[in-house]
Every structure is written in C-alpha cells, then in structure tokens.
Length: 78
Image 1 (cartoon, rainbow, N blue to C red):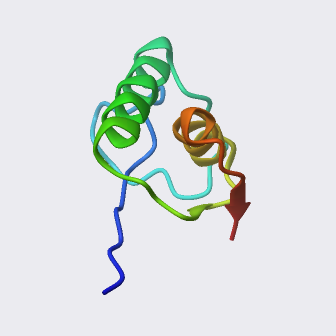
Image 2 (image 1 turned 135 degrees about the horizontal axis):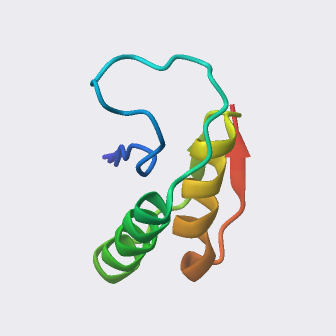
Image 3 (image 1 turned 135 degrees about the vertical axis):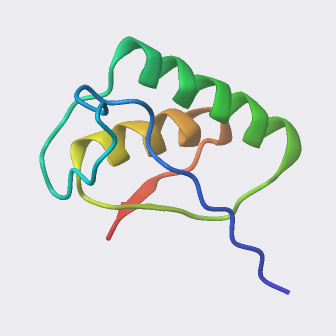
C-alpha cells in the first residue's frame, strides 16, 4: 500500500492576520527554517520516503530540500 505524508511549508512573514497567501513568493522566517529542520529530523527518524514532491514556490522548495537532505533524496517540483 502506498502511504502519503503531507507537510506544509514553514512559517513565513505576514501570517497574521491568518489568511490565504496564494502564490505570493514569501521566504521562510527563522522560525520557518527551524520548523523545517525539526520536520526533517522527525521524518528521517520515523519514515523512509521514496520520493519528495513540492510546489515550485520558493518557501515550499526550501522546506522540501531541508526535509530531503538527511534522506539523500532529490526534490521534484510539481
């Protein structure tokens, strides 16, 4: 059976008030980078994904690359 693990990108500026940011190209904050690194540690300790996909937005690619690094997997933008 195929399992799919979904994650969201880390924190970005201007999240308050909470609203949809769409395709705005926002960089991860320091908090967002820390969140991505914590997610990478958790995923690499608990799962063995075979493929990592991400949206082409910078914040999602950065998050995915941080997660992919300890797994030694490429990120496939979609």
